[in-house]
Amino acid sequence: MAGTSTHTVTNQPPPLVGYDVFTADRALVEAVERHAGADVLDEARSELSALGRAAGSAQLQEWAVQANEHPPRLRTHDRYGHRIDEVDFHPAWHRLLGKAVSAGLTGAWVRPSGHVRRAAGFLVWTQVEAGTCCPLSMTHAAVPALRADPRLAAEWEPRLTSTVYDRGLRAAAQKPGALVGMGMTEKQGGSDVRANTTEARPLAEPGAYELTGHKWFCSAPMSDAFLVLAQAPGGLTCFLVPRVLPDGSRNVFLLQRLKDKLGNRSNASAEVEFAGTWARRVGEEGGGVRTIIGMVAATRLDCALGSAGLMRQAVVQAIHHCSHREAFGGRLVDKPLMRNVLADLALESEAATALALRLAAAYDDGGERERAFLRLAVPAAKYWITKRCAPVAVEAAECLGGNGYVEESGLPRLVRESPLNSIWEGAGNVQALDVLRALQREPGALDACLTEIGRSHGADHRLDRAVKDLFSELADLSDVEGRARRLVERLALVLQGSLLVRYAPAEVADAFCASRLGGDHGAAFGTLPTGLDLASIVERARPDVCDAG
Image 1 (cartoon, rainbow, N blue to C red):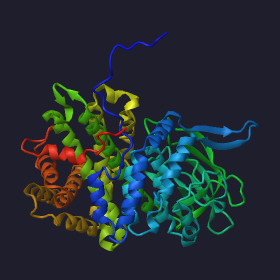
Image 2: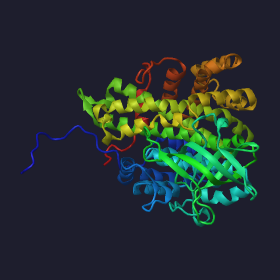
Image 3: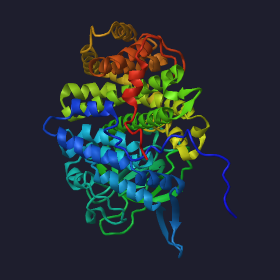
Image 4: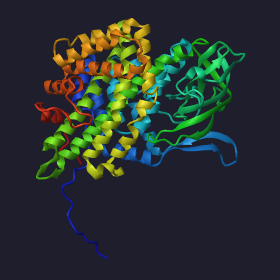
C-alpha cells in the first residue's frame, strides 16, 4: 500500500550536529586564551577544537543516546555460580570513555597549563555525555590524594594520567592506563564521613590492611582501584583498594546492587560490601580526611565545570531552536520576550564558564595565594554554579515548547542530569559550611578572594555596591550558619561579576551587574530590565551552525 502524506514538514530547526562545540563557545575560547600559557596556546586551541568537532559530531551524539538507552547491568555471578561482581556496559559507553581518556581529560597534572586545558575539554565533553565524566573526574582527582604516599604516586600516577583507555579487568601493573573510583559515604553517615564504621585491620605487610564494612555510594564500580575511608586503629584513614590484586586474583569487592538514579543513567553507581578486602594505606593513620581533601576539592571543581557544560548545551539548544523556529510572524529569537529569556540564560552560562575556568587557572598557578583563593572559591563556586544548572535546563527545555519535553530533543536528558552536581561531592549545605570553615580558620583565603574581586574596583557601581554589601555580611559572623547560603551566594555572584566586568563584552557585564548585582531582575528567567543590548548577548552565545546537519 502506498504511503500517504497529509502535509509537508516545515518550520522545524535542523539537527544541531556537525559543529565544533569548543570554537562555537566564544566565552570558553576567550577564557582559554586568557588563562593558558602563551607557549601552549596554539596547541591547546588545536586539541580542544579537535575534541569540539568530535563532540559535535552525529556519531558521538548517537553513542551518547545508546549509552543512556542501554544502562549498565550488574552481574554478581557467572553461569556456574561463581561470584564475579562485574558490571556490563554498552559498547558505546566504552567508545565514549576511550575518546575522553585519549583527549587527556585525566592528564591535567602532567602538562603545562594542564588544568585550564583539561577544564575546557571537560566542559566540552559534558555536553556529549555527562555519565562518563564521573570516572574521568575521580581518576583526575585521585592524583593529589595519592601524592600523600610518594611510592604509591610513583606507581599509579602514570597510569591515571595516561591517554590509553584499557577496559580489561586485570592487575593494574599490566595495563597502560587505569581508572580510579571513590567510596566515602556509608548508610549511617552520608556526608558525615567521620561516622563511618568500616574497619581497617593492619596486616603483617607494611601499609597493608584488611577492610570490613560497606560503602553506600561507589561510583564507576568497574574502575581499577578505589580510594575509600575506613576506621584504622589510629582513626579515620584513606586507603587504596585495587579491583584486581597484583597476583591477578580478584579482590573482595562485593557489588550488592546498582542505584536506580534520576539521571546519569549511563554511569553505574553501586553499593559495595568489603569482607576481608585487601587495601593499601594512603597517608597516615587518622589523616584520612586530610589525605582525601585534595581529591574532594578537585571533584568539586569538576562539578562546577560539569554544570557549566550542561548549562552551555541547554542554552545552545534553546538558541539554535529559536533561531530557526518561526511563530507569530517572525523568528522566535527576534521576539522581544523570547530574546529576554535567551539572553538571561546566556548570562548564567557565561558567568559559570568564566568562574570555573578561573579556578582551573589557579590550579595551574599553584602559588600560595592561588591555593588560598581556591580554598574559599571552590566551595562557593560549586555551591552556586551547580544550583543554577537545574533552572537553566528546565527553562531551556521550555524554549522548545512541547518538543523540549520529548526524549528525542535531548533536553530531558539534560534536565535529569542537571541536579546531580549540586548533590554529588557534598550538597549545598555542605559547601556553605565549608566556606564558613575557611572564613573562620584560614584568613588568607578571604584575603585572596578579596584581592581577586578588588581587581575590578571602580569598573561598575553596582558591583562596587555588591562588594560593600558582602563586607557588611562578613563583618558580623554571629549566627552566621543560618545565613550561610545567603553569604556564599553573594560571594559567588561578586566573583562572577568581577570576572565579567574585566573580561566579557560590555553588554554582557552590564546585563549581569544590572540583574544579578543591581537587583533589577525578577524571580524567573526572562525578566532582565529594559535598556540592555540583549540581541548582542544572544548572538554571542549562538553556535555558528545555522546550516548544521
